[in-house]
Image 1 (tube, rainbow, N blue to C red):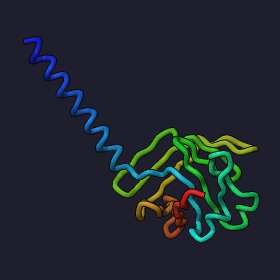
Image 2 (image 1 turned 90 degrees about the vertical axis):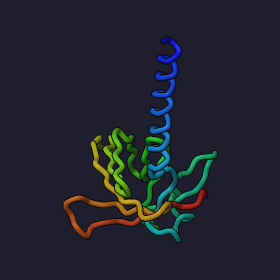
Image 3 (image 1 turned 30 degrees about the vertical axis):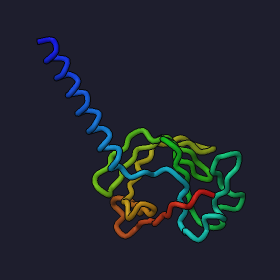
Image 4 (image 1 turned 135 degrees about the vertical axis):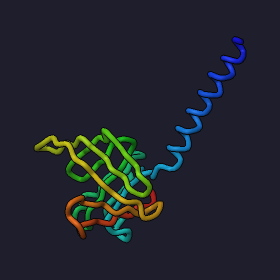
Length: 138
C-alpha cells in the first residue's frame, strides 16, 4: 500500500513538472534588447561590462527597451513585471514602473509576430501600434 502511494505521488509530481516545463517552453521569450528600427540597433544599444545599455544618443535613433528577467528598462524609466499572461501570440503584462519623477502601474500589451518581432498594442486605440525588433547582442 505504501509503495503504491509513493508511486502515485511521484507520478503526480512528474506530471506537474512536465506541465510547467511545457508552459514555459511555449511562452514567448522577451529577453534582450528591442528597437523600433532593426537597422538602428547598434546606434541604440551598446555593451558595457557584460551588460546591454543605451548609447548616449539612443533617443535620436528611435525607441527601444531592454528586458532582463522581470525588468523592463527604458532610457528614462525602469519597470518590474508583476504579472504576465500569455494567450497564444498575445502577451499582457502588468508592471510597476519608476522614472526620475514618478511611480506608476502600467499595463502593457503586445503580440508576437515571430521570434524576433513583436507589436506593442494599445487596447482601445485601434490602429495605434508600434513594431519592435529584437537586436542581435551588441
